[in-house]
Amino acid sequence: MRAKLTVEFAKLSKLAKLPTQGSAQAAGWDLYALEETKIERRKSSMIRTGLAVAIPEGWEGQIRCRSSLGKKGMIMPNGIGTIDSDYRGELMVLATWIGEDESFTVNAGERVAQLLFAPVPSVTIVETEYDNLGQTERGKGGFGSSGKF
Image (cartoon, rainbow, N blue to C red):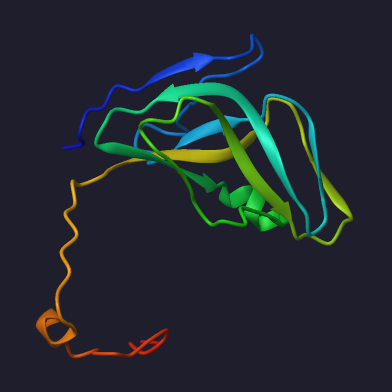
């Protein structure tokens, strides 16, 4: 059973479109470009959505690239954009063009990213000695240390 969450959005422009789901079980909500935005090759641009959101306390929003645009060469240089529950500004999508052409144009009304909602636990940070962290099989192994398979 999926958790129920109500999230309020405000249109900052009459042209803004509320997020939509691609299917009933889609994890993400599609965000739409408010206006045409040209993204130069290997440069980052902010794509406006024309929306502000009130994410409930204890939750976060995660803006992720749509796989169809990633396949063409548009990526989010920060991987996933985090929207904190106390942010009330316009939702923006940071995008970089790495495709073969010199630029890529996102059209007004085009789906440009996905917005997912995730719970954020209340965390208390406690300082301790390294030896108190406990031993694991992986230990100090860094990137790639768990193997390929």
